[in-house]
Length: 381
Image 1 (spheres, helix red, strand yellow):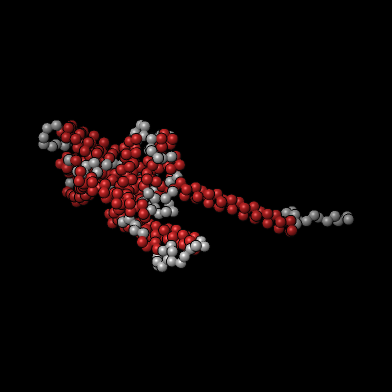
Image 2 (image 1 turned 45 degrees about the horizontal axis):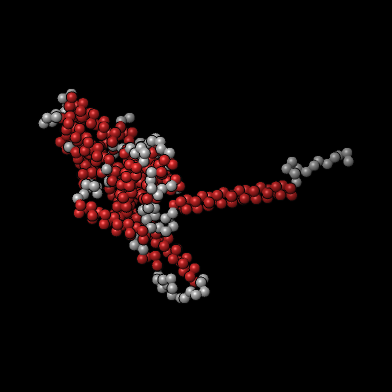
């Protein structure tokens, strides 16, 4: 089985790979559904307040916003683009949070957590669940998934304002959003293997480029590509649109296009003219991914004016999100406790029904006689 076949059998390919159009359509549907639910939630709260006000003796007609056809329609919800900005904020917070633990959480594990968060928000909206409620759980889940042990008490000790219950509460919700699939295939290891192969090709004189210090050039390109995979690849949609091998090649191409093209030529030129169309298609795909990586600009990379604009825009979106946050989902700890209580009550009701059923069956047997039938009559009597 070749590497591509192995990847196509993974849950990442089967559940989390999309075309650009399908990805945009999914996000639009999620946004529309969340907007409807937010308005419905605000409507229920306002209706409850109206009933409460109507029951008060001093209540006067016309109070409580009466006369509006649909009082929930004035809730201005986030757009898809604004939701993406909020998710990006959550991803950046995962990177920051991983730095404050002792020892710091490795970047590849933080990358796993970021992909958990991005996958979760394909079918859930920040208007329903704010990323600050989910991101610490995603990060802790990633440490378990990638076998990097850290006690929960130690984990929360370094994160201000976070308790163990805040991490535990959304875990099942997050797992549902992830379809209970935790496999994340990263491109970082592919980059390490690719760089090793390129260096070997140089040593064997199978790869040649003009200029001195070829090893140094490979090292510089690898460092730049690694940085792109650590940040740009995590903050863009490349994991949803491309395979891990395409992503690391794209990062390498963005770092040094001549070197990347020479490497591709060394791998494909010997295949002959029949592979020309395949190579053209592959290069087009990798270039598209490389452009996405290169065009991403983090706040740290922006100039002073751009940073001010970014912060101003995030403050605006934050205020808007505060006003359209689903009021019924704001306290995940309370929601989790309520669901657990309902489950216990349901379980107790099932037990009561089972006991009642057995009692009725016993009473029926007593009326119909002993389970082995009535006593036999003595023929000598």
